[in-house]
Figure 1 (cartoon, rainbow, N blue to C red):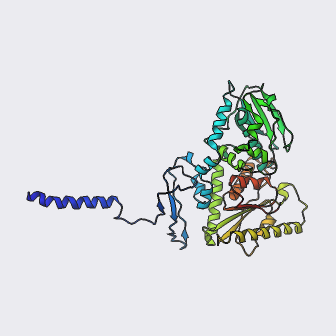
Figure 2 (cartoon, rainbow, N blue to C red; figure 1 turned 45 degrees about the vertical axis):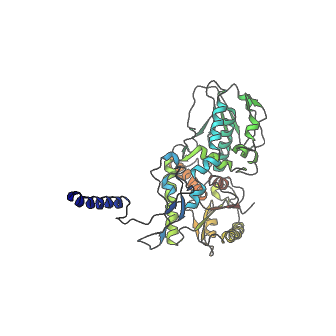
Figure 3 (spheres, rainbow, N blue to C red; figure 1 turned 120 degrees about the vertical axis):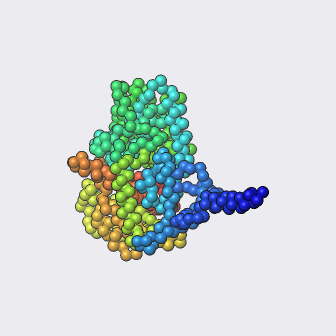
Length: 447
């Protein structure tokens, strides 16, 4: 009996030490973000069903600068299929942008499941696979126009039950360095030995074509930079016009595209994320650009500040347009943009006390003049986007480099808190669509 009286306290003490050590109270750890389990945490790189809500980001010390950094939950262990963007890019994005581009929210709001079901259901009518191929060999328009054509052809393929393929080999290959297929659709197929027909519809929204005439062809190749509307007809059990012009579905963008790029449901951006993820070289170049931007913000104590992207298409020699434009015209344009940016900054000032501007333009003169604004911190992109159709005279390596710069600057605009545009530029509207901005955080300064 005396043996057990001696042993029991020892066992109890040992058990208590074990429990305490398991709870982690016997060591120090870095400050962590406080969370509570009641609402979903929406961030870009997670499909985890665990429900979390950020209470307040806990700053942690920076031994080099003494400034604080906002803590972002590290989810690099998540499967890559759960990402819209790779961690190399995500790590530099503010949580506000991560929330806007949350993978689960995008999949839900853009009706990805419904679109996938429609693809499969409409394809059942054919005994063997049929292909609808968007092609580019040389002149297919600028980046914004090309994406508009790609999305239009994809939606037509869905409507008639054809398999969708992108053949963008010229003047610079799209795959695999710049864009790759998402997990929802593989558009890299290459059908051989099938009867095909080809057509080219450039800059002709109002020139209809008859999908019903293609019933005898298993492969249809189309070059277009716009949203050509098909004639009304029935194709098997698929009513083409009803599907393509549906007011209740994401494809309603075809109805509004001629006057409003994004459509009522931001269709262009939704279909972009349905089709694409970024490739390896684009990932590396974009991450490097965002790292450069982060370093710039740290030097100016702008971490966490509200970011306003601005795109200005001035029509310099890069565009082979407006080469004779007078300096006074550029100055007048910049003055109008400054008034617009000032009004926008005043409007958001009640919510965000600190903000800065990111300028992307085809004109170094425009960037130089905007960089002189003394009332606002301005970050200027180190590159000047060129017209992606007009650099065929470059060496192949330089063509790839030029195309990467075009995409990097587009994403640089798309991944900010707000966006200001200057007129009817397909490039700017593509950034607006890919970033899934709404009317509260995007504005066209010059209409």
